[in-house]
Figure 1 (cartoon, one colour):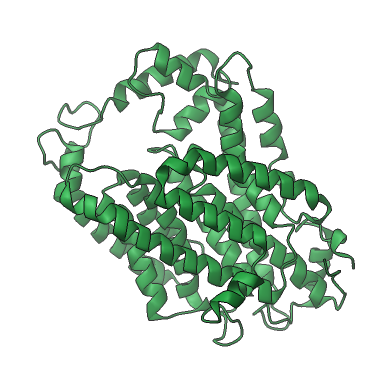
Figure 2 (cartoon, helix red, strand yellow):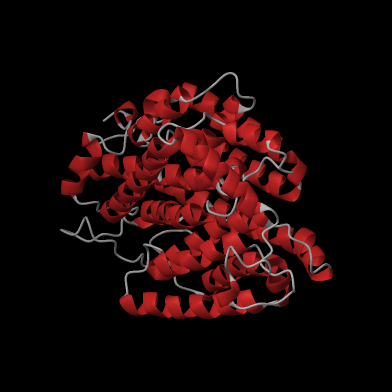
Length: 441
């Protein structure tokens, strides 16, 4: 089998490999159990330790590049715009170079892409930029899925991603934490809180059976602390929801335990001084007082902004006003910002009910597709795919309160990079299981 035959994870070569039983080092499923993810046995995969220089060399240059851009954007927020522009350009270039080797399930996104392009209006300023910012994380995933992903390369990519997150946590401790502690009114850190959710998702996957250990538990706790300390309410709600709903949890008892932990953590978070002052004009309040009509709830103008957007949306309920039309409307209406801080409402305003439904179907389809392949292949592929799929849960929740779509350099690009690595590994494992040669590039 030539590598060019491994174009899509849904192609016949991978389907055939399901019958062939993935008895390789990249798959932990036992004989006759291709659909059941079996916890990784310690030592079967080198996903911890190893020489750092070897890890750098073993990971494809595109993976190294994306992770470097992520760290630079995190350390220097002013580079955010340059970050997504560079990632878009390099991803498209890589897709052009290796188009015949793409393994990402692009067909899932074709209807959504066509609809988004169809709703582009040249008379709306920033429309093309909004479309690109919405789609470039997908380009990143498609591009990395074209890489030749041997077991060694996948292990190096995993170690490099985990090392990157350690660097991310160090940046948070050095740059954000001191300001947060010094100034209780500081409300920054939303993008870093979103990035921490990806680390949380990966830590949960590992703790669910692949690699139990104190280090992963520490990483999980630190990932939960980032939105908690920063008092970012949307990402914190998304983080607690992920703790309960992550698809990697297989035990009902564990899920019940996580529910209890999430409820307790949510209560402590809500009653903290920082969150109370950010939520209520008076500086304190209870859950029962969280009502739109309560004048004591501090909404920072979001209620009027959302009401105006919703009322205007009803004029074009089916197909919306066009890409980035919400920004044009908010500025014309005299609002102090063009950012709605509600991506679902923004999606409805720009693309209408049809667009929202199509977008939701696309996310659910991708979520189910990734879980299916995680069950089939197991091993590192399952770690990548479960991590990426799990991120769709907090993504959908955080869309209600933040602008997570247009800050893809901090969340979406990483999520799709991890998904793309999973699909690249699946294609390699499929060919290896069938005893066929993969063309060296």
